Length: 387
Image 1 (cartoon, one colour):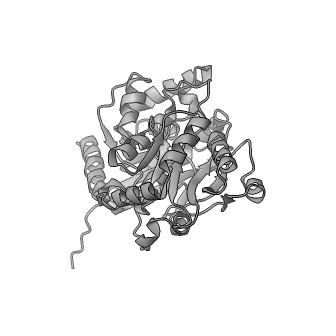
Image 2 (cartoon, helix red, strand yellow):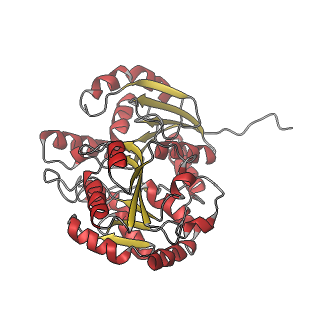
Image 3 (cartoon, helix red, strand yellow):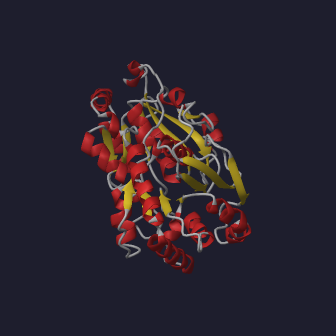
């Protein structure tokens, strides 16, 4: 038996919150790539949809919605974070603000910094003073990152290049694909009951008032043709989803859920998945951040063979049209949206789109060789730094 063990590079993965599905998938991917992963995170008291499979070093508690107040918490975590960085070969920071504080803690330690950007917040495209300051921070960290990891090419083209005016030399496109191997009955993927109403799902962190308004109007006009199934964290401001489920015929709210444990049960309850992002707000540039993001739900829906409804101007919408696995809406006009849903969301179309989903190659929605590519890229950064 060889007495000598091959050295495994150690990554410090810093999370903005505990128990986010996408963040936990990133940690699993890094572990599968062969890294020793140290996890540090800020506790926001959020609902835990999926815990990372690792011991978590809690850096402090943050209150959501108070963006600049969290700076105090970041400063208090400086010593602990710097100590963790010193034990690592590289830093994997999820979100630019986490990368910013990590870069300050990394002063003179000079560990390679990878910044993972999965979302763009409203403040980052706002015309306010706060938006200006945050964009300056984003530019700062973009220039100091050894590599930027994004979920769509549009992050590089539309945000970094067009908004921040920064050229990113080293980046890796890493989509929010599924990383599990659930066994499910694919026969459930073609309409749960051919004689029933078409059931449209809306899952995740539910924030979008417009989507709920669309669904309510759809049910008001066509109560015998559609049902709505919502599940996840209720962050809707205009409505209470539990109350709607009690008072509106055809509207269902299944509550919060865990990924991937509850996903099969949820997806068996629907015929289509709706993927819409927050409202079109007048105080935010309508490059809008959400045009470039990719949703976990897109990949989940592909995995469970559920056709998808989204906007044609978002990154998920491009893929829906490319693969012909659902249909898209063009704008926020509810009357036009209902007419298009009525026209397109038919039993025959859903069966056709489901067939197209069965033809998708696995790497469209599921991790295949991503961990080996990520391993090569990160090890190159570490080795270059050690030259």
